[in-house]
Length: 120
Image (cartoon, rainbow, N blue to C red; front, side, top):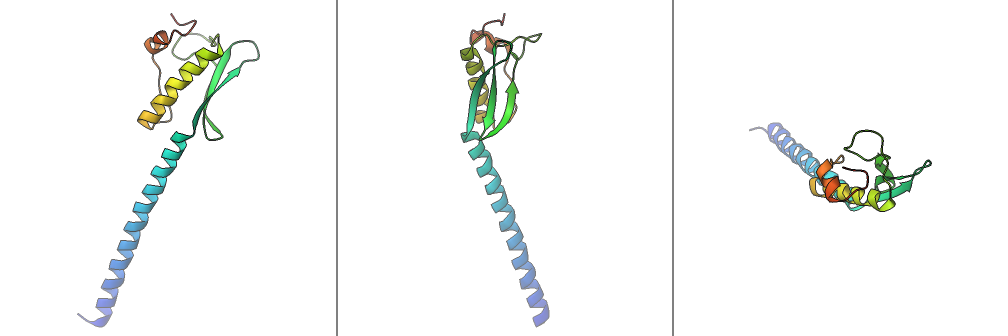
């Protein structure tokens, strides 16, 4: 093998290693960001202008979910108490932490188990 071929081969190997290391590092950074985001999840209940309550789920300072009606039931019914809004938000944050997804689902049965007013 000539010196030029050896140099080219060595350079190619080094370049390949750099690309692989960079890809691994990017994946680690992305996973760290997801974990950091999950650690900064917060439920923020809010009072509605015409009565009732809703909640937001924030990741850091950014609102990820804005819920001004009771999910999973027909119609546009609001939470009757701040505590009910908080309870549902807390369940969804727990699911977000467990699954790592940004849009969790809550069932009607879970709402009944939480004894959310207005859910029958």
